[in-house]
Length: 243
Image (cartoon, rainbow, N blue to C red; front, side, top):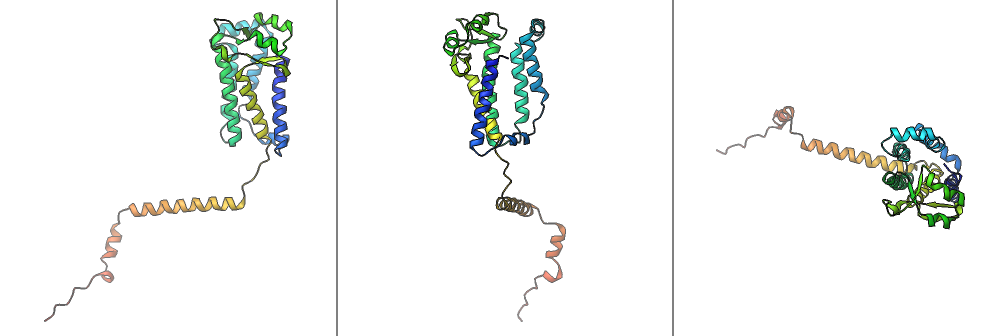
């Protein structure tokens, strides 16, 4: 993973932290969110580093995996995000969906082309150093788009000068998701108000009573009820005949 890409995600985290503080949150509140399957992002990160640093590992992965390594990395990331969505607040759920959407856009471009396609002109406009521009042809992760590129509009076509990087539409959606995850995760935990809790319990009790009454109304009378209706105390006396 390049330093400029790390800078990009650090910027997203910083913006999210700023929004979170402005909304009254604290970074310490992020620690209260328990995450599941933490091994998955670590495996994805290890694959990313190995694929980028080692030619031998890269070749083994290419010969073994039926899809590009980056697609597998995104798949591991998707599973991890999906495993952590249940039980979250509405804001965190929306943020997680944005992360998934952005990642899916990038994964689609990579799966269709083998590498992430990008615009040379966008990279130059973003201020990417010349030696990095020259290295793209040999990169295991990136390639310049041409007339044979599939779904080229999902590639790195947007200049982002603060990070000196060309980014994709998926990257922007991912950044928005990360910003929202951090900001929403920093919000303080607010326990349910007593009045709201009492109202919720009262509504639940009313629903249970309504269900019980409905069951009683639909249950046929038992034999004991029939004998009770015909008991001596409830018999109707015959009318006397007049002489």
